[in-house]
Amino acid sequence: MVKQVNFGDELVSPEEKTRRVGAVFSSVAKRYDVMNDLMSGGMHRLWKDRFVARVKPRPGELILDMAGGTGDVAFRMARRGASVTVADINPDMLEVGKERADERTLTGLAWKVENAEKLSFADGVFDAYTIVFGIRNVTDIPATLREARRVLKRGGRFYCMEFSSSDWPGFSDIYEAFASKVIPRIGKAVADDEDSYRYLVESIRRFPKPPAFQAMVTEAGFVRAAAEPMLGGLVTIHSGWKI
Ligand code: SAM
Picture 1 (cartoon, rainbow, N blue to C red):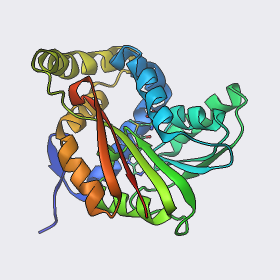
Picture 2: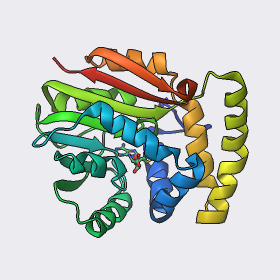
Picture 3: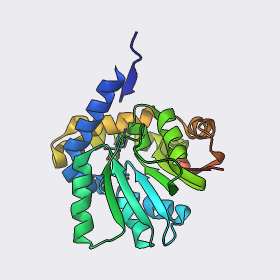
Picture 4: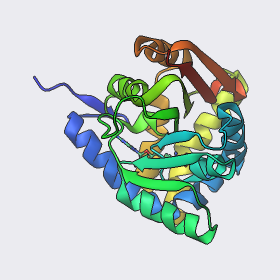
């Protein structure tokens, strides 16, 4: 029997999940940035600043920003002098990112269509690997983590930021109501796409809790795997090292 995986709350074949995730991001690409602001009340900017402060990109470092989409995280790292490859499975997201980079006259960026589960890069190339709000969308998380480790140099750093559900009782109830009722409606009003935003909310609910994800990071061979929760675990920065 073909193994089924979750696409939001639905069970589908792995190929179908990859196809549907592609359709979601092609559909939201042009409105992705404005929707991020609306869905998070602008908070995603602060989370990304904090994330990049943890990564500590240095001039001359080679960093792979996986599932980098429209470049938000990559731009912050390039401004600190790192050479950043923005890789994403979705060419539409990358196209929007390239236009944004041109508007900002940013240098030090390369753009590449890549599936996080099977990268085309050689072993041991990058000083750091980042993946922000991306890993919950991939079909095979363990394969993605193994590939992350493979393309890192020895001593290379892995950083991932992802949503989960907050443990703060009152806050998590308010967030749940906002996420399940309000976000799809904003998606309908702003991007004329309720289903894609419903998927994004469901995929957050389905993503492993931080301790379970941290165990997967360790399982993939990273050492000193750590999790830094924000807002009671609504957003967590995970890290690990390749030795
Ligand atoms: N990192 C960006 C940010 O924080 O603004 C974009 C995050 S967006 C929510 C998720 C991204 O993951 C999308 O651009 C999508 O195309 C990408 N993605 C989904 N599955 C992928 C895969 N298997 N390999 C590479 N990228 C993937």
